View (tube, rainbow, N blue to C red):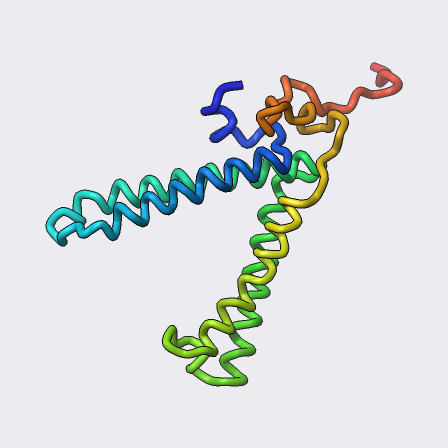
Amino acid sequence: MTVVRWLFDPRGRADRRGLLWLAIVLLALQGALFGILFSGLTMDRIGIVTPLLVAAKLLILWVSIVAVIKRLHDVGLSGIWMLVGFGGWSLFTTIVAAGMLMVVGLDAMRPTSAHYWTTMGLSMLPVVVLMMWLHLAPGERRPNRFGVPPGPSGFGPAPSFGWGRQQLAVPMAA
């Protein structure tokens, strides 16, 4: 399996080791991009660099989504659970923000306020918990409908065509 397929194809599986290594690499890349952005670029040069940074950030976002989907596959869950998690997190964040607005007022939305950072911290709590679970939950040791267990690289190959299809025990009569 090539590195390009590991990074861009959401099929297959990734174990805890694969997810951790990819997270470290992506974090280092994020740090490098942050360094480029704030390395004393003048306003006339930042206009050239900004589209490249946005493209790089979108690329990192896609690779992160693919990695989470593969990790979900390793624990036996469909990648659709990522959408369910995102929807639940969005609802939770809305409730937290609305609750903080009702309790402390607009101060909850001012970045200079401690209430703002409390709101942000509370809204990120489910993300932190789910990421910890993704990094700590053991994967299935046997092949599942998403492919064979990951190899030494931490990533498993995408299943071949028909891998997860259920075979009928009794052929249907014509």
